Image 1 (spheres, rainbow, N blue to C red):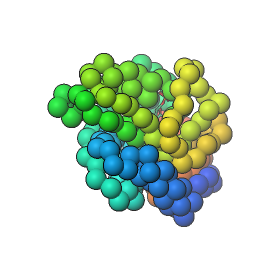
Image 2 (image 1 turned 135 degrees about the vertical axis):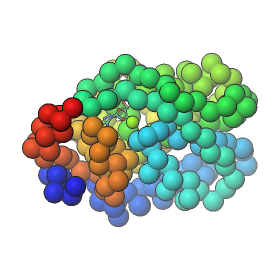
Image 3 (image 1 turned 180 degrees about the horizontal axis):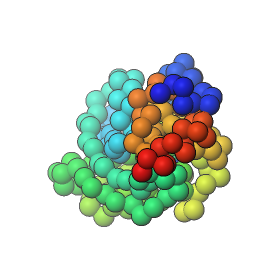
Image 4 (image 1 turned 90 degrees about the vertical axis):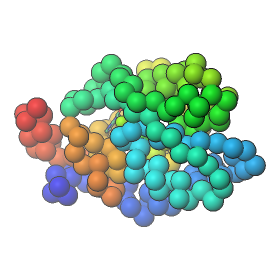
Length: 184
Ligand code: IMP
Ligand code: MG
């Protein structure tokens, strides 16, 4: 798997320190208030599990599943396949956590959806932000890194379902892209 990576863009150490910084920001933003971290599956599972363990104040955890990418690298229609229980949303302060803010469609839509289901407040936190790709006006409240317009994998981010378990964020070799694209 590591052989498919052309170069490492963000190392494990860099990710660790950025998560510590963002966890401290989240901690002071929610000090003294109840809140629920809503991890957007599948991409945020690695980031969210590291993030919550660096937040030393009470929180609850919920999950939401949305997918837009399939096997390609360009956005398709968003499908929400799993949402928290109404009792986990209504009247709650939610922090939606996702792997990457790209066109902005996913988090924009999920935020609207949570507010429509009665959330008291919805904020967002992402590992990566690709502002160059935005197609709807949307900014995350918390983010670890801004990245250039380049398809990346690792630390939860996939291509064709693979590479989520890489402990760093990297760029794929063109040959790996082509191999996986041909297999689908
Ligand atoms: P958005 O709706 O365009 O903001 O896209 C968000 C989703 O697209 C993310 O949760 C990822 O699943 C996927 N995505 C966007 N850019 C990348 C990338 O560079 N690598 C892997 N997945 C990506
Ligand atoms: Mg995703």
